[in-house]
Length: 275
Ligand code: SAM
Image (cartoon, rainbow, N blue to C red; front, side):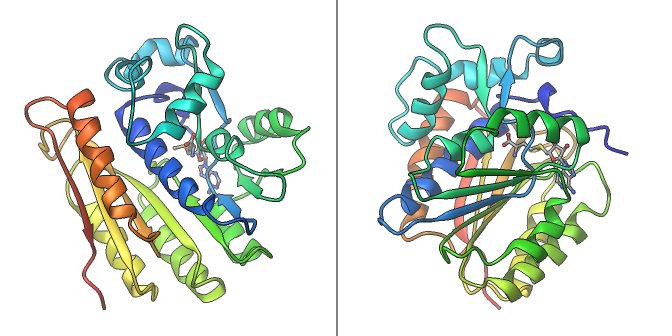
């Protein structure tokens, strides 16, 4: 079943890291005038109300976006700009990945976003109905990788942000990366994962290399101690990482460690071992 509801987690520390990193990839794509396309395989609803019952029940944003908003974030200005575009004074609305991408699109850039959950898919469709650059698909995002790539623009990003509620999620990711590499070997692929123990990150990094990507970057940001049980932080595997994004990510991790991290915080940015 689809029990995962993302509204409980909107704006937590893993979201801040994931979304700030996403904007760094977008900035790279915006450096050239040629149009780009983004496929967001697990879209959610686009914008989250931090005062909803779900969000208030967990208050996860306290240790996340609350500590960012209203401060300068020199390493990821585009992330902050999008936050500020939705919130004049106090923080109430939190942009998910489709909204962060949408606000970065130029006239000819495109966003395809998938969301499998019927209600959420409908909400997302409603939200972006009037934006001709955005297409919302209520379908399986992994299948979309096999069906919708490569984009006609031939440059861009596939953003994979699954709920990890199913045991076979790593297998699905591995299969999706195989299909993605077969269909579009030069695209940027970014896969997010939660960090409780080391296994998930190792597994996705290995799958990316096995799929045939020449260059695979792994970055992790943990504000808390890695105890193997609770959510210490999160990571991203980036296939075909943009030129010099490693330096941008290091700057981001340093800044986030100061804003979000405790004394046990840790982070890393490294190229995964090749084939
Ligand atoms: N990427 C979003 C963001 O940054 O705001 C958050 C995505 S949330 C972690 C995962 C979403 O994937 C949930 O909304 C869930 O309903 C949806 N989902 C689960 N399985 C899916 C699948 N196979 N294809 C597409 N969406 C799926």
